[in-house]
Image 1 (cartoon, rainbow, N blue to C red):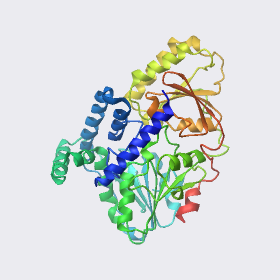
Image 2 (tube, one colour):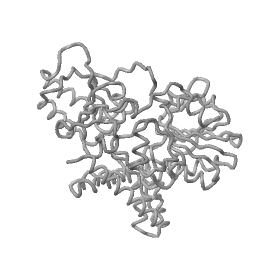
Image 3 (spheres, one colour):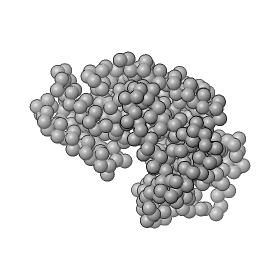
Image 4 (tube, rainbow, N blue to C red):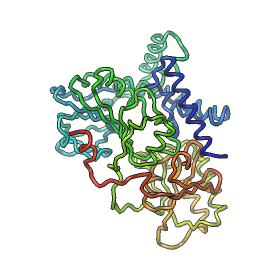
Length: 448
């Protein structure tokens, strides 16, 4: 199987599909089906699997679609919990995510994507999608928190039924339109747009956000341009894209300027993902810094999304049993920081530890960590590791949807060493990520 060719074929299908749906007056900016997130768990992922594997993926994809619809029930009672009185004085809006630990005792917020404190950017309103249950003790006046109140039911099936009936009637029972509207991702997009709308004013100059091509992000950008066409919309690709970046294929609602951090990203977005070269700007990374002494060797890294533990274990064990050439250190497992309480991740950690124990003779007994790491599933951390000189082994659940290919990323040399396991080397350093030096790149270029 030529993974690169298969990936290019899927990208071509995505572009054709988006063009067709836009022509059919489907809101592709907010449609969950049009959010082609290759790591999984979205309706767009379902289409990618069906295009790539056919009906053999039907059971798995059916479960994802059912879970997506049921999840609409947890969106009840989402709203902005605080409302600044003088929001008209703000000319810039930053949309981002937040957790309680991101807030300081004075009520200010430190954004982990732009490396900025909320008090340091003049005339800026922060709209934060809050990801914790416990709210900050103090919230500064220029911060909006979009969240669900504490002590509310996690799922409200009356909300789900009401949402379904409302959309079915509004769309006049059209199956074609209903499948693009009945999704957690679409409902969440409409909720956010409804709540942020009143803060977009004639004096709003810039709306910027860490960008992943999510429906709510494109929904906000599209709404901003409809309210005030002079608003400059900017998306920042805050981490390196996964191997198959179909979530970034240009579609309605995309920002008018996209910031990336390397030549390979520019090449992929312009050559394959339908972005006009004039819309793309390469800037040094805000997140990844020169000179940072980051030890990324000697670990097995877990991704944020896990679809099949069995596939991962089988692929990893097959590689270990048949490996004759690569000296493997005694690895330590690193869970994804946003999945520390995930039962699925904890189960995978337990099974990987058991696997390493069963095949302990296959690993070096030396104390050093070696200069190699294993990455599981879809993760952009692979690219940082390569740029920092680490040898990378990539264990995929789905090679086409998760692995990197030189067709899309010219600076990566790829060698498939066993089923679903790839070894990567860097052909040219500095082209995947241009490491930054300053914490104030976003401020200096766009927000002053």
